[in-house]
Structure formats: structure tokens, C-alpha cells
Length: 355
Image 1 (cartoon, rainbow, N blue to C red):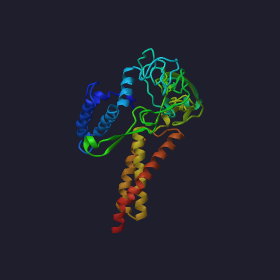
Image 2: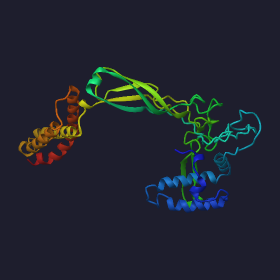
Image 3: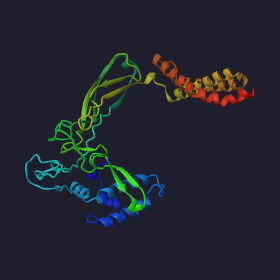
């Protein structure tokens, strides 16, 4: 989700940057009436209504608007002078870097990268890759080097997202609640609107001095290399996991793993074979239910036709395959039979009651 400093609230409401509070209120009123989900049934109406409500919540409040303007322009909000460390909140000295510490959102040197204040530790996702090999290679085992892109922990801040502050701070926009409530009584005549705080993105906490290298997230997109060691006698679908080589978590949270799935062509079902196995499973389900209900002459002929169709489609791509292929085929048949058993029972129950 985009941070507060990444959204142009003025453009969302269609007003100039020097618009008065009354102009902002009228602009929101006009858009809100058009976009309210009770009136506008367009698929994106609710999301757009939330966006303009968020914009109004920020721009209609003098303090929040001043913070937003400072974040968008890079102009320090609050004062200058003092120590280089700065004071993220409170006090009258920000070291020339604004109240957010170290020049949020651009940095003292005017760095072009915008930074996110949201402090939201989340575990990194796994990075997954498939490697297709032949049967002989899978039996022997092998090593393969892989170069890939992932989010790695930021070296500059050690993954925390903050270079100089050890702890996160309570979000000054929502006071730690993670939400903002907008009174729509004066605009629409009814109701309140509850939206996620755009500055902390719902976490209730913000990074005190976002790292310039990673933008406050604690991680950077980078190229990494890993050697995957696939053991001997590996089969289709087996996985090799390299711990900690997936995406780094945000704000110092744990990293995911690099997960390599081995695909062995000779052991996999082709599209035709999968269709055939599913047909066989369907025939099995029909046959079982017909035997239970005693509908031999009514259902068994149809089940036989479906079974024959399935066998033909399985055989057309060859059935001289290794043992794992047969296990995969059996699994596909069993899955189809299990899925069709309750359906066949429901469909054939009326015939059984009549007979």
C-alpha cells in the first residue's frame, strides 16, 4: 500500500495546493456524493471513496495537512538548528532535518527516494523456483547455482529501517490507533467513515528516522546467488529448502527461505493423462454409487464408457513410466473419485428411491 507521502491528496480531491478548508470540504462533498457505495455501483467506487475520504481526513486538519505538505515537499516541518541526531518528536530542535529525523522523506542531501514511515514488521516470503531435470539426473543428484532477485536485509540500518533510533514511535497522525475516523455528518448528512491511517498504514507505529538506503522498510531489492544441492533419488515434486535465503522481513522481522521444487518430466502426468485419470476417477465414483443403490443397468454402462475414454487418454501419451508416475496417476484418480462420490450420490439418489 502506498504511504501518505506517495499520494497526491490535492489531485484526488481536484483542488489546488493553496485551497482553503471550505474549498476542500466542498470538493470532498461533491466527490463523496458521487462515489458513495450506496449510490455508485462501479466496482472501484468503494476504493475511490476511501481514497478521497482519506485525502479529506488529512487536508481538513491543519496539523495533518502541514505534516503532509512537509512530507511531500521535503521541507522540514517544525524548526531547524541543533544536533545532527535530531529529535524525532517533541523538543524544538530537529538538526535541520525536520521532526521525523534525518530529512524524512528525502534526506538531508535531497535524496530522490521517498521513504515510508510505517513500522510494520512482517516475516519475509519464501522465494520459490522450479528446476526441471530428466530422470537420470534426478537419480544421480546434482548441484546447481542460481542467481535470483530477492529483498535482502539493508546493510545500512541492519534491517530495522532506522539508522539512529533503536525503537519505533507512536504514529502522530492516528495517535497509535492505526485508524482515522471521518465525520461525514456535515458532508453527506449521515454516518462516519473509518479508514486506515495512511502514515503508519494501520500499524499504529512509525519509524523515527527512516533509513535513506532502504526507505524505512529495512530491506532492499538485490541480486543473490545460492547453490542448490539436490540429493540422489529425488522425485518429481520434492523440494530443497535453503533457510534464510528468501525475502528478508520488514523492519527486522525474520527472512523467508529459498525453496526449489524439482520437476522430473518422466514422472509427471501430461495434460492428456491428467484428463484421463480424472475421467477414470469419475467412472469409479459412478460405479461405486450405482452398486450401492443397485442401479446396475442404469448407470454402469455410462460409467464403462467414461472409464474407456479415460483409459484411452491416459494411454495415448504412453504408460511405460517409472513408479512415481504410477503413484501420481493413482493420486489423480483417487482425488477425482473422492470429489465425484458425493455428487454422484446426490444425482443418483432420486433414481434409487424410484426403483
